[in-house]
Image (cartoon, rainbow, N blue to C red):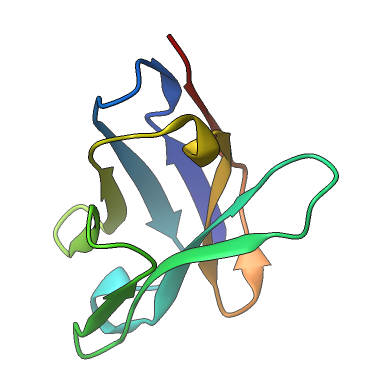
Length: 107
């Protein structure tokens, strides 16, 4: 299993970002997966999940989780970003987290 998150960066408050998580070793199409984020010194925070049947749950309505089965990739769309969203974001599958991507929200 490999998970590689990308798409992070520096964005101004109110902006948007779409994070990607390229997966290998298993099919995202039939897998439950999560996005979590971590700020140094704090516990990881769950952000969003997608079930194997496609049902989704998110921590806030300005966040959307989706997947592209053909690309075997998971996405996290975040709108109206706030400084409190600054963190390293990881995708997770079956307890495994790959390399994360840094999101920094600042003016």
